[in-house]
Each structure stands twice: as structure tokens, then as C-alpha cells.
Image (cartoon, rainbow, N blue to C red; front, side):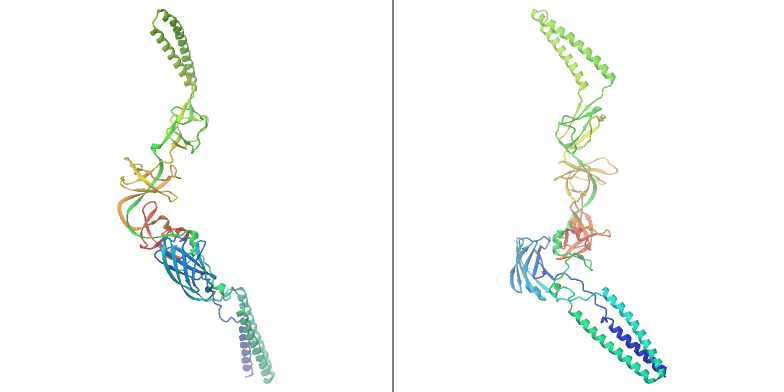
Length: 560
């Protein structure tokens, strides 16, 4: 019986010690709540057929962003009057936005505001309700290092408490062997000590909790109410939140989609070629050494005129040819001397009437012909062939050096008029002049084309088709590859949007972004078909009357 009573006493002391130490472990009986994520600044928006307005609470001021509803272009120079709880206020321009003083934002609540907008796009009245939430306090995160350390120290104290209770119980059992009265006295004394320590621990815990309640762990309630993270971010529902200020930086633009009937287009590979009527080759008719003209060889990109001398070709003369030419020169010199003496003899005889004047004139003509033949032979030996520009333009190709050997029919220079360029496309179907076509450069530039003609013979099982480029051709080069979009007679229905509206997602699908609200964009998977150099046709994925992003869609796709 004494042993049973001692064991019960030891268990009681152990439980009391454990309860005291667990209570002293740190007044955090429940897990601390997770901190609420920092929300964006309070805001509200209103739209009409012409305008889209959003008001954002920022401290003691109200920032106003006004854009065109269909295009998302900022409306500048507008007059905005705001009906506030303190009366009407005129908004002032602040950068690309408008601002009004709003001291009433310091008090939480719902505020009905009326905005009267007057701009060159028109006038409108836009009402909205702005809600200012109550300030909320944030607790220490559960993952705090001090909290984890306190938890581990509490567990260690709990183990020590159990051990202490066990030692006290064993001591009480030893006293029971000596006498029940002494043992009961020891148990009562131990219980009173544990209860007193427990009361002191609870009082200290309550004092510490009250001290923590009074601490200032963060910003003031006023500052915390307007603490915001107005950053572009991907929302859990898959939409993209982009603040108006960021939209201005990214130059986001939109357009309303419209259903229409369009001709189906086919894509053809093509490359830029020079206009055959405004380009030409400079070739050597005989082989020889190249030599520069007085001004030097023309450089690449140099503009030349028709008839300009670009180079000289000096044909080489063999030793046999030199001997023949010298022999021929000797014969001509001999004949010239004979004829000259004949002319000298004929002149006095003409005056005496011994010969006629006709014989004298014939001798003179024969002498002049021999001299011309002699001069031509000398010229052939020392004068090279001049290479002349056949058309006006720029030197597009050709790098030569003095002394370089040019073979007969060698292309020394290519002259191209940069203002007159064509495109050669390859098609597997016949193309008629009634069809329209456009070209798209690798940079996305659209080039209007005019049909010039089609080949009658196949080239690699395709038909070459020539188009002339209409309009500005700045930045284009001969040989550059392009994509030709030729319209067919087949019609199809869909939504025509700029090519910049469609972006390729990470999984390879085509995506367009819809401007759902003032600061939220929703991605839609679409099926597209080529239409022309600037637009594509959306067959499925989105309906008409939606605001689709036409500029900056690739930047929205990068928001994470």
C-alpha cells in the first residue's frame, strides 16, 4: 500500500512539472497565423464607350489614369473634375497621370466619387466607388528563428521537468519506508512548490504577451493601409495583373476585334532581286590586267552614273605578236615615206599642168590613210580597254585590285539602283495578275507588291513569279529572303488582328491577350491563319468585340 501511494504521488508530481514547463514554454499555445500577403493599393475603375479611368489611393493623394477604352492610349490634356467627400476638386497633370489631394483617404470606408472628363475625344461622366480597408497588423512569422529556438528550448525543459518529477517521486517512496507522515509532508511541499512556480510562469507569460501587443513591429496603421506592391505579376487564375504605370512604360495598346470576310492567303518563299531595267554588270570583253581609273576603283556602295569609267583592262601581248606588230609598223612607215615624196613631186607639177589636181588629192588621201593605220597600231599596243558603268546606281558587288588578271566575260562590278527592287517568289500554283500580294521581311516589315510576271518553265518543280516592291525600300538588300503572302480567291471568316498580337507560348501554342479590366489581361489560346504582311486571321479562340493587345503582347507573356 505504501508503494502504491508513493507511485501515485510521484506521477502527480511529474504531471505537475510537465504542465508547468509546457505552460512556460512560451505562451504560443497555437501556431502563429501566416502573414497576409501585401495587397495592392486601394483602387477602383470606371469605363465608358470612350474612356477607361482608374483611381488609385496613394497616401494623401488620389492618382488618376485616363486612357482610351478601345486603344488603351493615354488621354493627355484632359480636364477632370472630381466630386469628393470634401467637395469638387480639379485634377492636375502629374507626368502621364492626374492627381488630386485627398486627405479623407486616411479614414477607412467606402467613398462614392464622380469624375467629369472633358477631352478632345469627347466628354463623359464616370462614377465609381473606392473602398479604403481597415489597417491590419501582422504577426511574427511562424518560421522565425527565435520562435524555433524557443520551441526547442521548451522541449528540453519539458524533459527536465519529467525527470525532476520522477526523482521527487522516488524520494517520496524512500520516505514512505521510514514513515507515512514524513512522506506526505514531502509530497505536499513538492506540490506547493510546483503550483507556485506554475502561477509565476503564467503571470510572466501574460506580462510578456501584453508587452508584445504594445510593440511596433511594422509601419504605422496609416502607412500600412497604403503599403502596396504595384508590380506586374501572374495571378493564380492565369491572368496577368499589370499596373497602369507599368502599362505606360511597356506601351501596351489594344484594339477591338471585328468579324469579317477575308481572302485566304498562301505563303511563298521569296528573295529580293534587282530590277533588270535598273541594274547591270560590268564585264571585261578581253582578258588582261586591271588598272584603276584616275580617281581609283569605286568602293562598295559608291553611287555611279551611266558612262562612268570604273576600271581599265590592259590585255597582255605575246612576243610573237610584238614581232608582227613591229614588222607591220616598218611596212607602214616605208609606205608613208614613199607617198610623202610622191605628194611633194605632184605639187609643182599641178601648177605647170603636167598632172591633174585629182592625182594630187588621191596621193594626199593615201598618205592620210597610212598615217591613221600607223596611229591605230600604236594605240592598240599601249591603250587598255575601259570598263564603263551601263546604268546609274550603286556598286553592289565587286572587289578588285590593281594588277588583278580578269578573264574574258568576268563580272568585275554589279551596279544596282537601290530605289528599284523586285522580289522573286516560287509558287507551286499558277498566279494571275488579278491577285494581290504583300511581302514580310525577317524584321516583320510589310512590303506592298505589284505583279510583274510569271515564268513559263518550272524551277525545282515550282513557278518563279516576279513582283516589284511599291513604296519605301529603305533598308532592303539584294539577296535578302522574304515571305510573300499572296491572296487567293477562296474566302474565309475570322478576326483580323496585327501579327504583333499573337505570341508563341512556352508549349508552342499561339496566344493572344485580352484586356479584361483596366489592369488585368487574360491569355487565350487561338488558331491563326496567314492573311497578309501585317495581319493574321484568328479562326477560333476568341470572339468579336474583345479588346485584344496589339502592342506589347510579347512583354505581357514574360510576366511571372
